[in-house]
Amino acid sequence: MSFNKKFLRIYPVDGVTVIHLGEMEIWDGADMSLLRETLTTLVDRDKVRAVGVDMTYVKYIPGGFFGMLFDWHELGVRIQLFTPQPNVRRMLWFDRFFEPLSDATFELRPDRADEFPLGFAEEEEGMLPGSVMNVLLAGSGRN
Image (cartoon, rainbow, N blue to C red; front, top):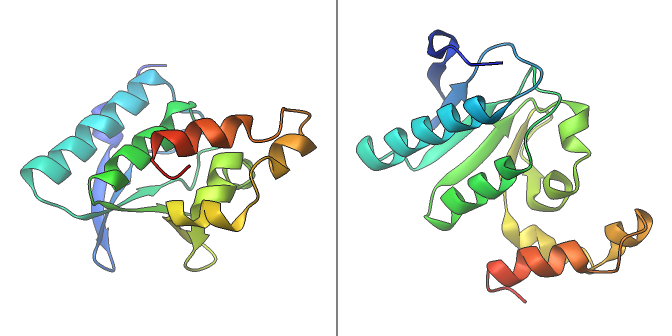
């Protein structure tokens, strides 16, 4: 499914510039490109330091979504997700790295990973202990 830019909306919420990609349940590569391009414009050109993504309708996101958000966070951008659906909230990355600010707003906080012992979620899923988190944390210099 290709994405039509006419559905893209940008609006402020409590000092955060929020991006809304429309009423799609599944984001694909084109949607990720549009999101990345929009974030680049907001951060580089407009000097926005706090961005949010409205996820009211989203039930599935590509694997690179959280990594992209982490990259922006490392550049000093405050990242929030608004009204993520239960499918998104149950994702390992979301569970480990986002902190609730309210019932509908969550902020990216990589320091939250320290609250979880390496390997605990992977063991529940039958993975080797720490395999996923060790890779993620090694990339952030937190190992």
